[in-house]
Length: 387
Image (cartoon, rainbow, N blue to C red; front, top):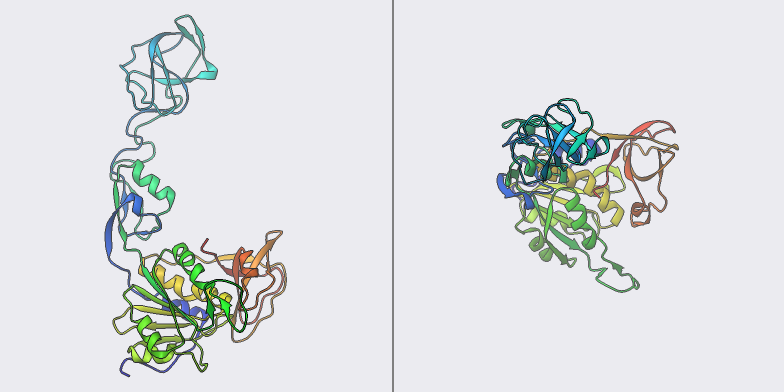
């Protein structure tokens, strides 16, 4: 069919590069309450000086001039400005309150003594007074485009006067879970297994910056597979059916849909039969193997970079880790090994069959072991977990 090309198996790094090649989605303005996990589409600039007024850094007294001071009635509390101080006056003040005009310093509570209407102590000019614009000035660029919106980013935006921010639209993901053998509940048996991927994928995708908008169970039939992949979402993902077994229909479905396969398998273990394709309308499709561990490493290998690209997120520098044991190579494949940490060095988790989740459940990351292997004490790249 037009647009379909011969399958191409890629290396681990080539596969990730192909997945990162998609153009970012459009920008939109969202309320801060809806921005967590998105990516800035334009720089975040301060709309105010911060602090916007002189602010007390401590509980104590705002003082004017040298002590001892006449202690004035009242208190300066956060959100409640008070009248200006005259020379020789002091007023009780709380942390975060506006320092009244005329106030030279804040005398900490533990450093002052009240004697009737007098306050006794000593404070240097400017002591414990946060100046206007000590953190930033109005118009300052605080964060660049391509920054992931984390809780501190939300807090910074609010503190500097924003009610909304311009971000890349969060990629939507439609999931098709293929397989007649899958059970929704109960105990596995008689050739049938529990569907664990439907439960995991929304969390995996959310941790990588996307949002699962639909998840459909699909029988092992070509027509059903074609219909499941013809769905409206920024990214289409399926699990199972990516190999060449008698009921693996993904390749035939992609042909029928006029897709272009970019990577038909990635030279890594587990996860080798993962698929990356461009659908006829240009949207990315990621085919994950059906075995749980294989599916997860495929998410990290292909789906994570696709979501980063659509969100306009620049690839982060690789995290690395020292290995605490020797790892055999499997030339020409890259090994993807869930690892735990022992004395700050990575060692392989246990129970790492492609159908197993036990080792992954306790892992701290996924070590990327090159085809030639790695010796104890070597430093290797690590895929960080999206939780």
